[in-house]
Image 1: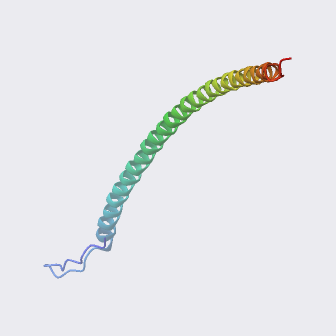
Image 2: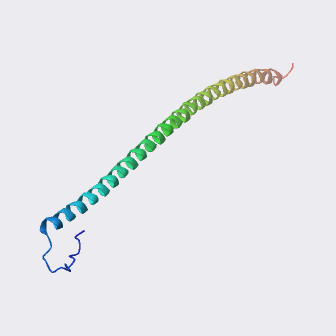
Image 3: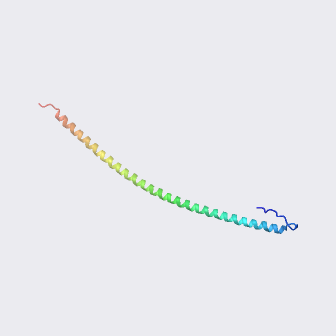
Length: 114
């Protein structure tokens, strides 16, 4: 900010060194405010990064746990599916063997008696 020129009541010209000193003092004050603002912004950024890192770690842990649970459930489903497949095969084999046995029995029953 440039200070407004104050007219001298004594009629003498303003002291150029005094004006420079005032301007320098203002600049130093402005510099202090800007440095404080930059420091506040840096701290805010650091806090934000820390919070973000924490959230990322939490989400990674949560995703890892979900992935582990999913793998466990898929393994269980595969085991159940294989068990079901085995049971179905046994039932089909039994049905086929029973059907073959009935066919032989039927063939013997349909032969005419003499």
